Length: 147
Image 1 (cartoon, rainbow, N blue to C red):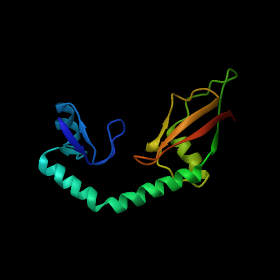
Image 2: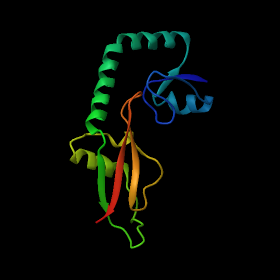
Image 3: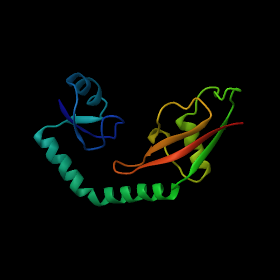
Image 4: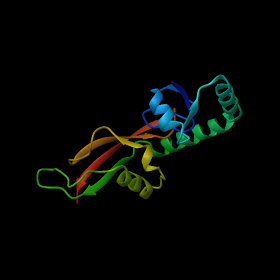
């Protein structure tokens, strides 16, 4: 079943993307929650018109996301946490902690666009990916240290 997404959905696609999903997922989850519409000819034309009209706004959003990525640059975030003698931390570092650390540095980043490459459960260096825009992704270094 082909649907057109009305919002960005992590792991599936971005707003106005036409994606192929299983019929049950489309009919029972995406469409009732207002996350997607059926990709009929009229809906496709409507979305294309919306994209055409909003293209200048979309370019501004992309430029803003690129400006944030450029501002962050090669930033190395350092997050302190409690850890045992073996270097294993109590709990795990979460998206919220990374978002708060970025906010302390002057970057207001939504925690939902932050993703880790694996779980952060030990002291050490990690990479964090920020999905700022459909075409703008930025990777920052994360250093987890003991408090």
